[in-house]
Image 1 (tube, rainbow, N blue to C red):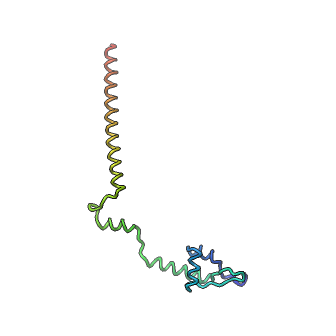
Image 2 (cartoon, rainbow, N blue to C red):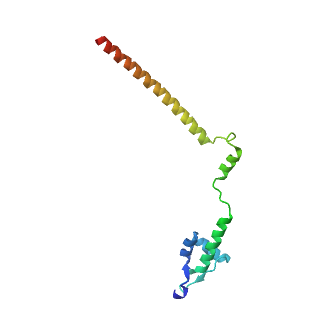
Length: 130
């Protein structure tokens, strides 16, 4: 291994590049990556190759545009807000919210009626005791 001091094992190279070992094996088969074998048969990647690929990947990353939205959201944005169709989950959410508001309103009316009538009963009992 002393002859290969400027090399790293393929697993370490994969970690450094942010890809899988299988990807590096394919790149080696395609000639995109230079790999040597140790005396024990392990694949070793020269540090220079890893550095070259990191630089190439970094350059490719700056060349392409960053898409911050999904294709669906970009399409909906182009359509405008007035034309956006409601998805089934949005329809269900609005329906549930509407029914919750209606239930809450009915419950509040029931509670306020009960409180009002209870207060009136209490007041009438108080007045009759005087």
